[in-house]
Image (cartoon, rainbow, N blue to C red):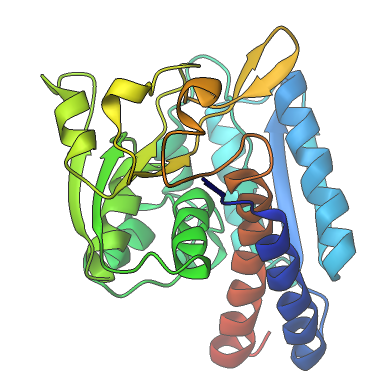
Length: 278
């Protein structure tokens, strides 16, 4: 069994980002907006600030105890017009009454570093990728790094954050893709029929040995907390010594995802400098 770790990939990408930032001759800037005091969101925000500093990106957190939808949209438009801010992210979760996707529609595509706006999602569907969601990009990075190209893939997720963009990004790279979800009648047989299985369902221990084969390559995108431990969506002890290869949780997709957000900030800054004279 091969362990598909992500730390080395993340560090390689961070090194390239530092070089690109030097060539830019400006410090890219990312604005984070958080509403409320969700502890997980605060942890993720601090991690982005720390990782940004590590590669030379200024990451600033703007936090609100409470704000109306109208005032949030107004603030987003102010940031959109600020040439000193290259990227903007709205931290999840948002309070009740906020529609995340309606909110991000107000972020210009060239500052949408989460890549969840309709424009950036549409570019992916048209095989014209610009800014892409960080987690699907991390899955692609792992497959590229370990040499799993143009294979059959089953993606167990259909969300706009992972499953939908990932399936299109895989198609753009000549993979043959099946997508499963909560209404799929026989996920196990679909998963067994593919060389690669990507699981992102938010349920610890979901993917078990009877859903894979000895030749399976498993990419575990899940992040769950069980007894104060971070675990993925696979029954890791059951299948890790059975399949051909698997990503660990933590230490697989996660480190690359964090770096890919910063990569989007740099790409956004490069685009803005070239096309907008920033």
